[in-house]
Amino acid sequence: MKKLFNFCLIGVSVILISWGFKGHRAIATIAQKHLTSNTAYVVSAYLKGESMADVATWADENRNNTTAPWHFLNLPLGLTHEQFVKFVSESDNNVYTAILKAEATLKDKSLSADQKNEALKYLIHLVGDAHQPMHISRKEDKGGNTIQVRFDDKGTNLHSLWDSKLIDHEGLSEADIAKTYDVATPAQIKQWQLDSPMEWIWESYQISSEIYAQVKPGQDIDEAYYQKYIPFIHRRIDQAGIRLAGELNRLFNNEQVKEISFTPTPQADSQTVSPVKLEEVKNAVGKTVSVQGKVYSSRDIGSMYLVNLGAAYPNQLLTVALKGDAKDLGRQLNDKTITVEGEVIDYKGKPEIIVTDPSKIKF
Image 1: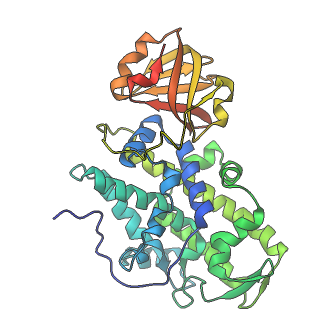
Image 2: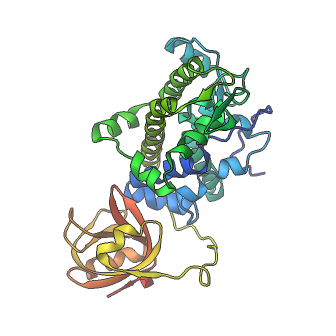
Image 3: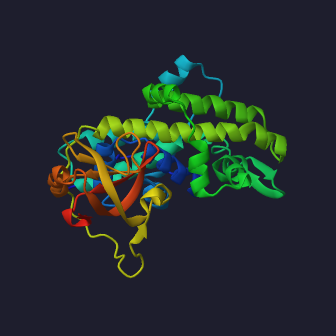
C-alpha cells in the first residue's frame, strides 16, 4: 500500500500557525527568485502547475493530529550549542526531522510524483517554520501561545505577535513584503545557503530565548518593541526564502524530470491571457501574459534552451526558457521577432517565462 509522505509521527499539540499567510507566501516568493531555471521547472512540475506561494500554507491548512508536531520543536531554555545539537539529534517528531525526511523523500527516485508533490509542499512550509523563533521554544507555554500580551490596543499572545501581528503592523502588502525583505547580499546568500537546518533552528532558539527574556505576561507591546524586533523578522523571512532556494537548487538543479500530466484548474472563463509590452513584462510576475519581442541572443544549456528578448544577455528584458517539446524551437528563433504566452516568473531579478508547449511560441 502506497503512503504519501507518511512520517509515522505521534502526539497531539497546540495548533501553531507560523508567519501567517503573508509571511509564508513571502518566503516562497523570495525563494522562487533565487531558483535556477532547471530547479524552477522541476518545482513547477512536481507542484503540478501551482506556484510555490500558492502552496506555502498548504501544510497548515491540512494539519491533523499526526502532522501537528512537524511544525515546531520544544526545548528547555539555557542550552549551549553543544547541548542543543545533542538534544535535537536525539529527538524526533519535530520540524527538524520533518525537514530531513521531506528532503529524503524528494531525493528518492523510486517514489511517485504524488509523493514528491506532498513532500515538496511540506518542505516549502517547514523551512519557514524553522525560521520562526517561537516555533523553536518552550513546551510549558506552548511556544508563547499562553503568554498573553497587548499590541495595537488589542489582546493577543506572544506566539501570534511573532507570527503575524508585528508584520501586519508594518502595513505592507504581500508583494511589498517579498520585495522589501529580499535584500541579502551575494556574500550573505552564499553563507546562509551553506548553513545546515540544525543551524537554522539554533538561530531561532537564540532569538526565542531573547524574546522570552524581554517580555512579561500582560505586557503592553509598544512601538519601541516593534522597531527593535521588526528587523529580526525581515532577516528571518529573507533567510528562510534564501535557504529554501538553496535546498531546492541542491535537490533539483541537475534533475531531469519527465513532463508530469495533470488537469489544471479551468481558467478559460475566469482568467484571460493579458497582452503586455516587453518593457513592462517585469511588472507582470505571477501573471499569464502574451508578450512580443525580438530575439537578441540564445544559448543551449542542456536541460533547456534560453532565448533572450529585448537585448542580449545580461541586459535582456525577458528570458524564455524552452524545455521539453519546445526546446527544439530554440535554434530557429535567432534574430526573429516572436510572441510568447505563459506565466511570468522572477529569476534572480529578471522576468522569465518557461515554455514546454511549442504552440505557445509564434514567429
